[in-house]
Amino acid sequence: MQNPPTTPEGGRRRIQSIETGHRLLAALVNAARPLPLGELAAAAEMSSAKAHPYLVSFINVGLVRQDLVSGHYELGPFAMQMGLISLQHSTPLRVAQPIVTEAAARIGHTLAIAVLGSHGPTIVHLSEASYPVHVNMRAGTVMSMRYTATGHVFAAWLAPKVTQHYLQREYADTALLRSTHLDYDESDFDQLIQKIRKQGAAQALGNPLPGIDAISVPVFDHSGNIVLALTSIGPSAVFDVSLEGPIAHALWQCAQQISTALGHTPTP
Image 1 (tube, rainbow, N blue to C red):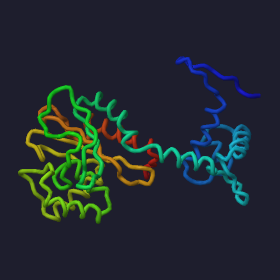
Image 2 (cartoon, one colour):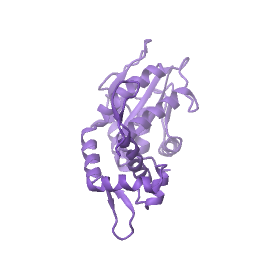
Image 3 (cartoon, rainbow, N blue to C red):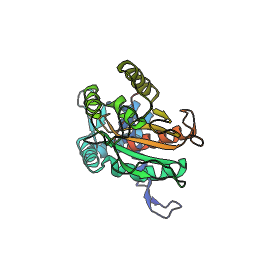
Protein backbone atom coordinates (compact mmCIF):
# COMPACT_ATOMS: atom_id res chain seq x y z
CA MET A 1 0.00 0.00 0.00
CA GLN A 2 1.37 3.39 -1.00
CA ASN A 3 2.40 5.69 1.80
CA PRO A 4 0.18 8.79 1.99
CA PRO A 5 1.71 12.22 1.42
CA THR A 6 2.89 13.89 4.59
CA THR A 7 3.23 17.56 5.37
CA PRO A 8 6.33 18.87 7.19
CA GLU A 9 6.35 21.95 9.34
CA GLY A 10 7.18 24.11 6.32
CA GLY A 11 3.78 23.30 4.84
CA ARG A 12 5.04 21.60 1.65
CA ARG A 13 3.60 18.15 0.92
CA ARG A 14 6.07 15.29 0.59
CA ILE A 15 5.90 11.64 -0.42
CA GLN A 16 7.64 9.52 2.17
CA SER A 17 8.07 6.48 -0.09
CA ILE A 18 10.15 8.54 -2.55
CA GLU A 19 12.43 9.72 0.25
CA THR A 20 12.75 6.11 1.47
CA GLY A 21 13.63 4.88 -2.01
CA HIS A 22 16.15 7.67 -2.38
CA ARG A 23 18.28 5.99 0.28
CA LEU A 24 18.93 3.15 -2.17
CA LEU A 25 19.99 5.54 -4.92
CA ALA A 26 22.22 7.43 -2.49
CA ALA A 27 23.83 4.16 -1.40
CA LEU A 28 24.68 3.34 -5.04
CA VAL A 29 26.13 6.81 -5.56
CA ASN A 30 28.24 6.61 -2.40
CA ALA A 31 29.48 3.10 -3.21
CA ALA A 32 30.46 4.06 -6.79
CA ARG A 33 30.29 0.38 -7.76
CA PRO A 34 27.63 -2.31 -8.36
CA LEU A 35 26.25 -3.82 -5.15
CA PRO A 36 24.46 -7.09 -4.33
CA LEU A 37 20.98 -6.76 -2.88
CA GLY A 38 21.94 -7.51 0.71
CA GLU A 39 24.83 -5.04 0.79
CA LEU A 40 22.79 -2.35 -0.95
CA ALA A 41 19.86 -2.78 1.42
CA ALA A 42 22.16 -2.65 4.45
CA ALA A 43 23.79 0.55 3.17
CA ALA A 44 20.31 2.08 2.84
CA GLU A 45 19.40 0.85 6.32
CA MET A 46 16.49 -1.35 5.24
CA SER A 47 15.79 -5.05 4.79
CA SER A 48 16.29 -6.81 1.47
CA ALA A 49 12.57 -7.57 1.33
CA LYS A 50 11.75 -3.88 1.67
CA ALA A 51 14.43 -2.77 -0.78
CA HIS A 52 13.53 -5.16 -3.60
CA PRO A 53 10.19 -3.58 -4.69
CA TYR A 54 11.84 -0.15 -4.85
CA LEU A 55 14.61 -1.56 -7.02
CA VAL A 56 12.11 -3.20 -9.38
CA SER A 57 10.40 0.17 -9.87
CA PHE A 58 13.72 1.97 -10.29
CA ILE A 59 14.73 -0.57 -12.95
CA ASN A 60 11.43 -0.02 -14.80
CA VAL A 61 12.08 3.73 -15.10
CA GLY A 62 15.80 3.43 -15.84
CA LEU A 63 17.17 4.79 -12.55
CA VAL A 64 18.77 1.43 -11.69
CA ARG A 65 19.99 -1.49 -13.75
CA GLN A 66 20.73 -5.08 -12.67
CA ASP A 67 23.58 -7.10 -14.10
CA LEU A 68 22.14 -10.27 -15.57
CA VAL A 69 25.18 -12.38 -14.61
CA SER A 70 26.08 -11.18 -11.10
CA GLY A 71 22.65 -9.85 -10.10
CA HIS A 72 24.32 -6.73 -8.69
CA TYR A 73 22.62 -3.35 -8.91
CA GLU A 74 24.05 -0.08 -10.23
CA LEU A 75 22.78 3.27 -11.47
CA GLY A 76 20.82 3.00 -14.71
CA PRO A 77 20.86 4.98 -17.97
CA PHE A 78 18.21 7.50 -16.94
CA ALA A 79 20.11 8.31 -13.74
CA MET A 80 23.19 8.97 -15.87
CA GLN A 81 21.21 11.21 -18.23
CA MET A 82 19.89 13.18 -15.25
CA GLY A 83 23.41 13.64 -13.94
CA LEU A 84 24.75 14.86 -17.27
CA ILE A 85 21.94 17.38 -17.74
CA SER A 86 22.45 18.64 -14.20
CA LEU A 87 26.19 19.10 -14.80
CA GLN A 88 25.56 20.96 -18.05
CA HIS A 89 23.34 23.47 -16.27
CA SER A 90 25.34 23.70 -13.06
CA THR A 91 28.07 26.11 -14.06
CA PRO A 92 30.58 26.46 -11.21
CA LEU A 93 30.13 30.20 -10.76
CA ARG A 94 26.34 30.06 -10.73
CA VAL A 95 26.41 27.27 -8.15
CA ALA A 96 29.07 28.99 -6.05
CA GLN A 97 27.74 32.54 -5.77
CA PRO A 98 24.82 32.03 -3.34
CA ILE A 99 26.85 29.60 -1.23
CA VAL A 100 29.78 32.03 -1.05
CA THR A 101 27.51 34.97 -0.20
CA GLU A 102 26.11 33.03 2.76
CA ALA A 103 29.56 31.85 3.86
CA ALA A 104 30.97 35.40 3.70
CA ALA A 105 28.32 36.57 6.15
CA ARG A 106 29.39 33.84 8.59
CA ILE A 107 33.11 34.43 8.13
CA GLY A 108 32.85 38.20 8.49
CA HIS A 109 35.69 38.95 6.07
CA THR A 110 35.91 39.59 2.34
CA LEU A 111 35.45 36.40 0.32
CA ALA A 112 36.34 36.18 -3.37
CA ILE A 113 35.76 33.64 -6.13
CA ALA A 114 38.49 33.24 -8.75
CA VAL A 115 38.54 31.31 -12.02
CA LEU A 116 41.43 30.58 -14.36
CA GLY A 117 41.30 33.29 -17.02
CA SER A 118 43.43 33.92 -20.08
CA HIS A 119 46.00 35.89 -18.06
CA GLY A 120 45.85 33.75 -14.93
CA PRO A 121 43.68 33.40 -11.79
CA THR A 122 41.01 36.10 -12.09
CA ILE A 123 38.55 37.41 -9.49
CA VAL A 124 35.00 37.07 -10.83
CA HIS A 125 32.92 37.62 -7.67
CA LEU A 126 33.56 39.51 -4.44
CA SER A 127 31.52 39.45 -1.23
CA GLU A 128 33.03 42.35 0.66
CA ALA A 129 33.40 42.64 4.41
CA SER A 130 31.30 45.16 6.33
CA TYR A 131 34.48 47.02 7.30
CA PRO A 132 36.73 48.76 4.73
CA VAL A 133 39.66 46.75 3.38
CA HIS A 134 42.15 48.86 1.46
CA VAL A 135 42.96 46.30 -1.21
CA ASN A 136 42.90 46.95 -4.93
CA MET A 137 40.81 43.85 -5.62
CA ARG A 138 37.63 43.81 -7.67
CA ALA A 139 35.96 41.63 -10.30
CA GLY A 140 38.44 41.32 -13.14
CA THR A 141 41.58 41.58 -10.99
CA VAL A 142 44.22 39.09 -12.15
CA MET A 143 46.13 37.46 -9.29
CA SER A 144 49.74 36.38 -9.54
CA MET A 145 50.11 32.61 -9.66
CA ARG A 146 53.53 32.97 -8.11
CA TYR A 147 52.92 35.41 -5.27
CA THR A 148 49.31 35.15 -4.06
CA ALA A 149 47.35 32.54 -2.11
CA THR A 150 44.77 32.42 -4.91
CA GLY A 151 47.47 31.77 -7.48
CA HIS A 152 49.16 29.15 -5.30
CA VAL A 153 45.92 27.15 -5.09
CA PHE A 154 45.65 27.00 -8.87
CA ALA A 155 49.36 26.20 -9.19
CA ALA A 156 48.93 23.32 -6.74
CA TRP A 157 46.03 21.61 -8.49
CA LEU A 158 46.40 22.45 -12.17
CA ALA A 159 48.32 20.11 -14.45
CA PRO A 160 52.04 21.00 -14.15
CA LYS A 161 52.33 22.04 -17.80
CA VAL A 162 49.37 24.41 -17.42
CA THR A 163 50.87 25.92 -14.28
CA GLN A 164 54.20 26.41 -16.04
CA HIS A 165 52.49 28.16 -18.95
CA TYR A 166 50.91 30.75 -16.66
CA LEU A 167 54.07 31.21 -14.62
CA GLN A 168 56.07 31.95 -17.76
CA ARG A 169 53.64 34.47 -19.18
CA GLU A 170 53.30 36.15 -15.78
CA TYR A 171 56.78 37.66 -15.85
CA ALA A 172 55.85 40.09 -18.63
CA ASP A 173 52.31 40.86 -17.44
CA THR A 174 52.14 44.20 -15.64
CA ALA A 175 48.42 43.76 -14.82
CA LEU A 176 49.11 41.23 -12.09
CA LEU A 177 48.83 41.76 -8.36
CA ARG A 178 52.27 40.59 -7.32
CA SER A 179 54.59 40.72 -4.30
CA THR A 180 56.93 43.64 -3.79
CA HIS A 181 59.08 41.92 -1.17
CA LEU A 182 58.99 38.16 -1.74
CA ASP A 183 60.51 35.90 -4.34
CA TYR A 184 60.98 32.17 -4.79
CA ASP A 185 63.54 30.18 -6.70
CA GLU A 186 62.21 27.17 -8.57
CA SER A 187 63.02 24.70 -5.79
CA ASP A 188 61.40 26.82 -3.08
CA PHE A 189 58.27 27.28 -5.18
CA ASP A 190 57.96 23.55 -5.89
CA GLN A 191 58.25 22.77 -2.17
CA LEU A 192 55.64 25.39 -1.35
CA ILE A 193 53.20 23.94 -3.90
CA GLN A 194 53.70 20.43 -2.52
CA LYS A 195 52.99 21.73 0.99
CA ILE A 196 49.81 23.49 -0.16
CA ARG A 197 48.56 20.38 -1.92
CA LYS A 198 49.19 18.32 1.21
CA GLN A 199 47.47 20.73 3.61
CA GLY A 200 44.59 21.53 1.24
CA ALA A 201 44.87 25.31 1.39
CA ALA A 202 47.23 28.21 0.68
CA GLN A 203 48.08 30.97 3.15
CA ALA A 204 49.45 34.45 2.56
CA LEU A 205 50.85 36.53 5.41
CA GLY A 206 51.30 40.13 4.35
CA ASN A 207 51.86 38.99 0.78
CA PRO A 208 51.51 40.46 -1.79
CA LEU A 209 50.23 43.37 0.33
CA PRO A 210 51.80 44.14 3.74
CA GLY A 211 49.25 44.04 6.56
CA ILE A 212 46.78 41.88 4.61
CA ASP A 213 46.51 38.11 5.11
CA ALA A 214 44.61 35.54 3.07
CA ILE A 215 43.55 31.91 2.95
CA SER A 216 42.57 30.23 -0.31
CA VAL A 217 41.06 26.79 -0.99
CA PRO A 218 40.20 24.87 -4.19
CA VAL A 219 36.82 23.87 -5.60
CA PHE A 220 36.63 20.78 -7.81
CA ASP A 221 34.18 19.60 -10.48
CA HIS A 222 32.80 16.12 -11.15
CA SER A 223 36.02 15.04 -12.89
CA GLY A 224 38.23 16.14 -10.01
CA ASN A 225 39.62 19.20 -11.81
CA ILE A 226 40.01 22.53 -10.03
CA VAL A 227 37.45 25.02 -11.35
CA LEU A 228 37.43 27.76 -8.72
CA ALA A 229 39.47 29.12 -5.85
CA LEU A 230 37.79 30.66 -2.80
CA THR A 231 39.92 33.27 -1.08
CA SER A 232 39.17 35.14 2.13
CA ILE A 233 41.24 38.21 3.01
CA GLY A 234 41.49 40.63 5.92
CA PRO A 235 43.82 42.83 7.97
CA SER A 236 46.53 40.86 9.74
CA ALA A 237 45.48 42.26 13.12
CA VAL A 238 42.02 40.68 12.99
CA PHE A 239 42.32 37.90 10.40
CA ASP A 240 43.02 34.37 11.69
CA VAL A 241 45.16 32.84 8.95
CA SER A 242 45.82 29.55 10.78
CA LEU A 243 44.57 26.37 9.15
CA GLU A 244 43.10 25.26 12.48
CA GLY A 245 41.05 28.44 12.83
CA PRO A 246 37.38 29.13 12.10
CA ILE A 247 38.03 30.99 8.83
CA ALA A 248 39.90 28.05 7.29
CA HIS A 249 37.26 25.57 8.43
CA ALA A 250 34.44 27.74 7.07
CA LEU A 251 36.25 28.02 3.74
CA TRP A 252 36.76 24.26 3.52
CA GLN A 253 33.09 23.64 4.30
CA CYS A 254 32.04 26.18 1.68
CA ALA A 255 34.36 24.68 -0.95
CA GLN A 256 33.18 21.16 -0.16
CA GLN A 257 29.54 22.20 -0.49
CA ILE A 258 30.17 23.74 -3.91
CA SER A 259 32.30 20.80 -5.08
CA THR A 260 29.58 18.35 -4.03
CA ALA A 261 26.98 20.38 -5.93
CA LEU A 262 29.21 20.14 -9.00
CA GLY A 263 29.35 16.36 -8.72
CA HIS A 264 32.76 15.95 -7.08
CA THR A 265 33.31 12.89 -4.93
CA PRO A 266 36.38 13.27 -2.68
CA THR A 267 39.00 10.52 -2.83
CA PRO A 268 39.34 8.82 0.57
